[in-house]
Structures are given as structure tokens and as C-alpha cells.
Image 1 (tube, one colour):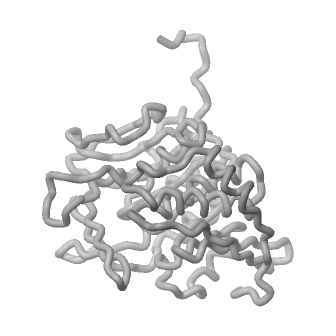
Image 2 (cartoon, one colour):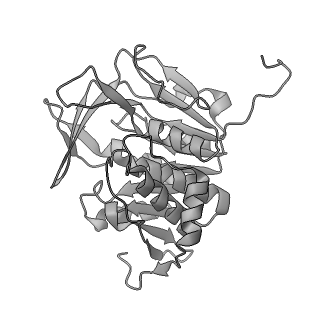
Length: 305
């Protein structure tokens, strides 16, 4: 029991977004694995020796046992839990979204959680309101994976991409933006407006590693390709979230976005060789691979921007 006079511990890494029920069989709503950005991010943070705190919405009967014991979990009221079916085909992933839980607004986040070292905004179904990022002005690193703001679903639940309507309200508050090439429909030019607001953007490119874009003082963009670690893929679900969390933690620790991206690449590639969160590696495993497979970042001579 904590003494009333003892200050509450500071929040290390705050993860915002709704957990999901990821269906094991797309037609079976009773059996699922816990998913969502915050789920994968919490396990990564735990494996890397950090202390995750989660703010999410889920129905009371949702099984949250997959979250690490180290996580402080704040479950906001909801009658539903967002449910996804992820179908992987030779032509890419097909997604279905069902029973989306309600949004998370600034008023839902307690004052005690508003000054973490790292904030990761991880919406999966447009559930983080535009008023949320501004409350974290004192945090060291504020980052977002915007995929959840860039999804819509039809009457059958089939997920499609859409423009990010709240981007201009959210981007000015971010230190880093991490997204996949799939999120921008493989159209690099869609990134251009974000450089007016965010100094660091990272794009993950599936088996091809990632690319780091850093805005310079003169407004130009410095682009660096970060090589992948080859992997024997078993389950790619959550790979982007695993990359993002590992990247942000290493960025906060080293202030080196290139080495942080390599750290994230290695973490994600190790994880996809196993099912769900079971293969998320330890810090020692990642650093050992990096030590035995050194690389020198090579700037792209002809930047896309």
C-alpha cells in the first residue's frame, strides 16, 4: 500500500488507444487474441525494461490477460470491444472492423498521466479525439501511428483507407510520426504536408526495412534508408506497432533516429517469426543482433521531398 505522503511514480511510457479482439477465425467471434497498438506496445515496453501505462476502452468481459503484469491499465467504460478480422492474401491484407468502442477524449485522461516521458497515440478505429495531443506538452517524446485515423469501414465491416481529417489539429503537437507505406497507399507524396509540422517521420516498408525523414533547419528533408533484418515470417500482425514502440524507446534513450530505426527493424523482424506477441524480443537479443550485424546509415542522395 502506498503511503499518502509518497509521490506517485512518474509515468514512463503512456499508450493511448483501444485494444482489439483480433479474431483467430474470421467467422468465429468467440475466439480471439488481444490486439491493437496499445497491446503490442505494452508487451514491447515490458520486454525492453520500461513501465507501460495504458488508457483504453473495452467491454467488461474482455480478456486482458495478454497484457504484461507490469502495465498499469486504465479501462474506460464501454459496452463493446473493437473487433478486427485480419485476412492475409498474396495481394496484401484485407481487414474487417466490427463493434468499434467509443472515442477517447482529453477529459478521459487523468491529470496524473499527463506528463509521461513518452506518449504514443495509437488509434485503431478513429478513437483518439483531436483534443488529446495538446495535453502532453511536458512530455519528452510525443508520437503517433495514424493508421486508425486513416481507416473507414463499410456496412459489412470491410476496412478502406480514407483521408486523415484531423491531421492539422494533431500533427503540430507531435515530435514523431510513424506509419507504413500501406497507410499512404504507396504514394510517397502524401507525406509532404506532414513535414510542415513534424520534424521526424518514419515509414516502415514491410520486408524492405524503413526510411527515416528528418526535417532540417533550412526546411529541407534528410532521407535515410534503414536496412531490414531478414525474417522467416509466421505472423505479421502488429509488426508496425512493435517497430514503433521499440523505435520510440530507443530514440528517447539515444536521440539517434537512425540507430533507433535499426533497433525497431530488428525488434519487428524477430517478432513476426512467432504468433502474436510471443516472439517480441528482449533488449539483449536486439542489441546482440545489432552488435554482430553493424550497419552505417546511408543517406538517400535523391530525396523524395
